[in-house]
Length: 383
Ligand SMILES: [Zn+2]
Image (tube, rainbow, N blue to C red; front, side):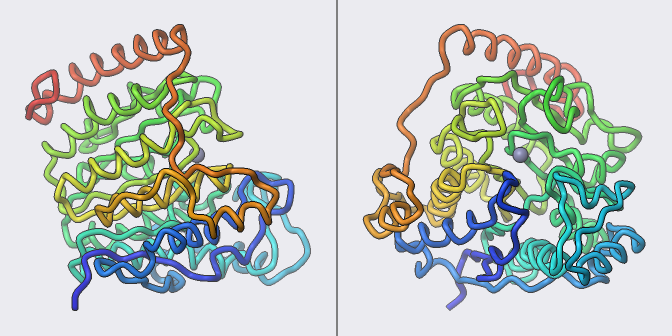
C-alpha cells in the first residue's frame, strides 16, 4: 500500500560529536526518534520510515565548490584537528574531525531523499529531521552548517523549471538559502527570525527583498527579542500564508528549527511547542506537496518534543499532553526532570509584547507596501 508520508531517519545521525562543550548536541536526533516511537508515531499506517542515504559528490557539486568539498574530504580522513578559516573550517563554531564528510553527506542526503520521496514518489509530505543547515555557503561553513542540504536537494527541481516556496522558522535568519536564491524568481524564500541587529548571522532585515529577477522573492520578517507565540503566529498568518497561496508553488519546503523556543539557550524568542504545532498544521492545510527539514535547537528535549509534535501534525493525529512513561524513564536516565510533551501556554510580559507587536506591525506594513502588490495580494492578506 502506498503511504502518504515519509520519515527520513538513520541510526547514524547521532554518531558524530561537535565536542562536549559545543551547543549542537547530535543526540537530539535519537531523542526525537525515541519520543516519536514512545508516542506510537514510527509505526503509523499512513507513514513509512525511509533510511537516509548519503548525498553523492555529483549532487553536492550542483551547489558546493569542488575545492571546498576536497578540503572537507581531506580533513575528514585526518583524526588530527585541522583548520582553514577561508572555508570557515576548524574553529570553535565549525569543528572538523575524522568522519565529518560522511556524516554531513548523510544529513544532506536525508533531505535529498525527502524531496525525492515527495516529488518522484508522490508522497503527500516528508520530514528530514537531520536537514535544515541553512547557514552553509557554496565554499564556506558557518553557524554549525557545512553542507546546505535544502539548496542541494532543490537543484534537480530547478533544472526541471519547478517553482518552490522555502519557509524558515528557525530563530536565526536563513542566510545561506536566501543568498543561493537571491537573484531568481524560481524560489520564494521567507524567513521569520530574531532580528539580526545584534544577533547571528547579522542579516535578514526587512528590506532584503532579492535582486534582479529575484526582486520580491526574498522576504524577511525580523522579530525583536521576546516575541512570543502570538507574534510568531501573526507573522505566519499575515505574511507567510498569503504569499504561499499567491505564489502557487510546485513544492513547499520548510525549515523547522526549534530554537525559537523560549527555553533555548542561544536565542531570545519566546515561542513554545504550540507554535511548532500551529505552523505544521497550517503547512499541512495548504494541501501542497510538503517537505519539512529540521534545523537549530540547542535544548535537545525541546527539539524532541517540538519535532514529535510536527510529525504528529503531518500524520494529523494528536499527541498526549504528558510525555509517555517510557520516554520519561529515558530522560531520568539523562538526569532530566521533564514530564510534559506540550509546553504550558506562555505569553511574553506586557511591555515586551507591546514592543514586539509594534515592530511586527511596522514590518508587516512595509511588506504589504513593497511585496504584496507584486503578488496581487491586498493588505490584510487576501489574494
Ligand atoms: Zn538557529
